[in-house]
Image (cartoon, rainbow, N blue to C red):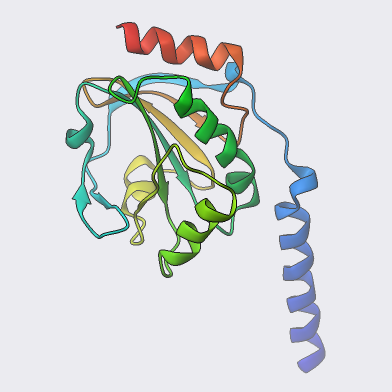
Length: 177
């Protein structure tokens, strides 16, 4: 019995290493956005001080909501690109809104931001994972483009280079609407 359990544990570790290996990360292209207008999510999320927020707090702004976790290598790989993306737009018109889904202490996510010098965006938290259930996602990262009315207009499943010219065009178009 012990041998079977050890083999199972070894298989689980091998699978995790294979799937989560940063060398296996393939960035998704702008063409892979799923464009569909639908209701944004209603679940609330918190900042590091436990203040509650909802999409309504960001009305009249275009939002790029990035659902991520510290255990997700592709999520961590794309975070510097999201940080750079925010510098290309006025925060009064467009906000990158990363929402961390770790169930543990917030300190891990905050330390990640400090360690990688992520200074242009602030992370938020949904430690109960209400948002992923509401928007029906199965993996991470997932990014939602939310228009000024609070509607989801596009979704990207997987990591990407957020300062790609085609992605910038999609965001500029949404800001100008």
